Every structure is written in C-alpha cells, then in structure tokens.
Length: 575
Image 1: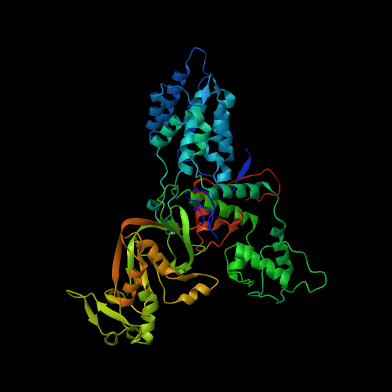
Image 2: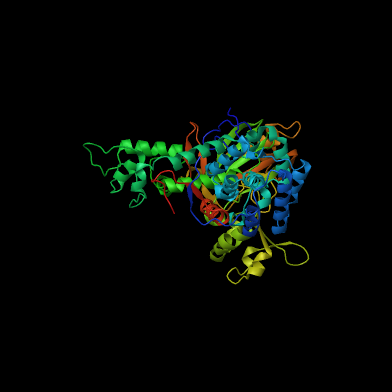
C-alpha cells in the first residue's frame, strides 16, 4: 500500500507517484508591467525624496511614502498595506536601525531564485528594491519588500490566469490569497520570516522534485542528444527494421553503435533501451516507436524546461488540503487513483477524450452510483456520429436497442426512427429529438456510471468496448472517462452506504434495471492535467501534452510576466 503524496509527500504508484542564486537572466518574452507595480511617476516621486535625515523618523518617511503610493495608485487602493503598518505603529518589518535585516536580504535572494518555481524574479520589484537599498531609501525598500511579498504570495498561492483557453474554469481551482490574508501571515511569522515565506509555496514532493529538475536543466550542460533531435523515421519503427535515423536513436538513448552489425538496424539492445524508456514514460512498453513514443523521445531540453514550468503552475492550482478519501484522474496519462485514508487503495487505466472531444480539467463531488444506466446521446455525438449512420441506415437506432423520443409538443412521446426523413432534418428539428440507449449489452456506459454532477456532463463509467484498453494511446472517448475496473470503483463508493455489501451490487446488476444509489457524504473527484510526474524511483518522467495545454499555458504566462531563464552559462538556450 503506497501513501498518497497530496497529503503525505510520499511517492505514488506507477506514474503519479508524488503530487502533489542567480541575479542575471534573460526574459524569453517582454514582461508586461506587473499589475501591482508602482507607476513610473510614483517610483520617481518616492526615489527622488531626500535621503532621510537623522532628525526625521522612519515612521514619518514611511507615512509619506505610503501617502505617495496611495495618491499615485488610486486604482490599486493599498488600504491593506496601510492598515498593516498602522496596526504596528509604522514599525518596519524588513528594516532595522536603518539597514535591511538579514531576513530581508534572504528574502531578496529568494526573489532572485523564484525562477526555480517557474516565476519571473523581475515581477517582484527586484531592481527597484536593490536600487532603494543601494541608495539608502529604506522607507521605499521597506514598502517594496512588502509589495513583493504580497505579489509573490498571490502567485505561489493559487491560479493567476484566466484558464478558459484550457477548457476549464477558474472557480474550480485554488484562488490566490487576499492581501489581508498574506499580511496576517506576515505578521504571524515575523519571528521566523524564512519559514513564513517558504510556506507560501506548495509543499508536495512532486513540486519540490520538479524544482530540482528545472534547476538541473537550467544550470547544467545541454544533453548531447539535443543535437540529433528531432528524430525522423519513415513511419512506425519496429524492432529489426532498418532506418537511417537509427544511429541518432542510439545517441538519444545513450547507446554506442554496434561494432560489427549494421548500424542502421533497430537491434535487440536498442529495442531493450526503447522498452525501458517507454515503461519509464508511462507508455505501452512494446518497443514499437509510434507517434506517442517519438513525441517524448523528441523533447529537447528547452521543451522539458517549458513543460516543467507549465506543470509547476498547474500544481499551484490544486489545494493541498483535502479529505482523506478522494478520486484522482490524470488526463494525459489516462490513469485513475482511488485514495482512502490518504493511501492509494487502487489505480486503473482509463480511456479519456480524444483531442477534438477532450476531457475537461475540473473538480466535482461524487454523490453516488447508477447501476444498469441508460444513456441519453449528447448533442455533439447525436449530430456528428449518430445522424450520419441514420442517413445510411434509418434502422440503426432499433438495431442498437435505442429509443427515439420527440420533445416537440406538450409532452415527450416515442417516435419510429423509420418515420423520420434523416436526410432532410434541420438542426432545430434534431435538437428536439432525444436518443436513449436502454440498459444492456449495446449501452456504451456498460453497467456502472458514477454520479458526479458538473457543467461539462463528463463522468466516470463502464464501457462495452474493453478492447480500447489494449491500445497504445487511450485518448479514444468523446470526453467521458471509461474505467477498466468499474465494479471496483462502484464498491469503493458504495461502501460508504451503511451496511452495504458487494453482494448487494451484484444482485442489482443481475436485475438489469436502472437504479441510483446515493452516499451519505460526497467524495471529491479531481480531473487533473499533468504532463510531468515522478516515477517509482524518484526520476522525473515527461509525458505527452495530449491537448496542447502546456503550449497554451506557456503563451498565457509569457503574456503576463514573461518567462525568465538564468544565463549562468553559455550553453543555455535564448530567445
């Protein structure tokens, strides 16, 4: 039994085992002025004030600086910061006897190293803070350090973008803490500022391990294999086949060329290395190099850096405080975990949505199970899948055991599919027809549907097509998640019902009639999207960006802050 790291920090099984000082650098895209940044006029007004004379108290200088900020940033409404200092009688937090405290200097280094968390240090007033300290403007430095704390705390503490382009909603994810919450935290941790700052970031082992890997990628030499990427084969490459790109494949996997054999042949030693790579990457370990395997083989260091940054960002969206019993689905790896008492009860492969009908990222609550479910065909499937089949074969619905119901008129009524002109039906007429698959062998939901209301109408269910679990790629559904072990999931949920036994489930399934079974306390379910994870041996594993969400997220991050990479060595990629 493995301990689930969302709560414990110990690595998971198989794929999702753990969840969850450089001052020079280059910004990959021009960083916009931070939302909370001082306007140029405000910065000039404060920085041009005379250096505080001994006869002028720090309190007066701080009040004057706050007044200037308040006047110059009327839209910002910095009442929280003003209230924080008023409550402490304008006693400085970061400055002591006219000089920065050691904790302030440590925090400055923490800001400089925030790139290790995929953030841009320049978003946290770094240059202005250093300039204020160097010029002796301690009141301004005090305020800027506090402003940096607030912005960094918000960026580390929740979602900071509008995720609609990623087919999800902001409300599903952890919201950034308010200024008042962060300032209260500041006050409460004044005796241990270092611990207080470090507590702002996620504490899970995956987050920390990805930070380590990002640091390694950015500060170490580029891998030798980057020079041979991308690999290009004539088609799918099978063991023992010959291809001109095989020598480059050996370089990619760190193998030497064979001394006597044909170097262009995909031999046993190379196949063993490919199978090991596939297994570590969560792919079907068959030695066949198709699109999925090739995609991960072709990840350059730059790709991996950006993939880690995107995943660090998404890890900050998920609240680490959650119940001890939950269900987690990671969409890119098509894997489900059932967590109970903070431990992995079981995991299973699942089928997720294909790219054109993707599975959304969201959170919901499982309220029960439906046994022997019927299935009302969703509008997209009705229009794009069923209608063409009816135009070819008007008897298709009857052959599949499906009922046709019209919603036109005062009340629903059953129609004969043969009485409908499917070749001349309008979108409006089609929208008034409901196609219902009755329980049975033809039902794509199988025998079990998990009840988990959500706006996307996506749910976990059984399937009447188990052969899809044998495919190398499991992005095959129209959005819902098909489970390989649906009865195990049903028992995981239904044992919350007082006195419920597995035999009760089997008895109801045999009857073949639809029945809904609720549970007393809902079970949270998390539909997540992580393309980098920690393997069983602690290694960082890179998966496929199934829906292109990593690329879309990186575009959004560039727009708000830019992407900062330290440039301590000439081998770093720029641009």
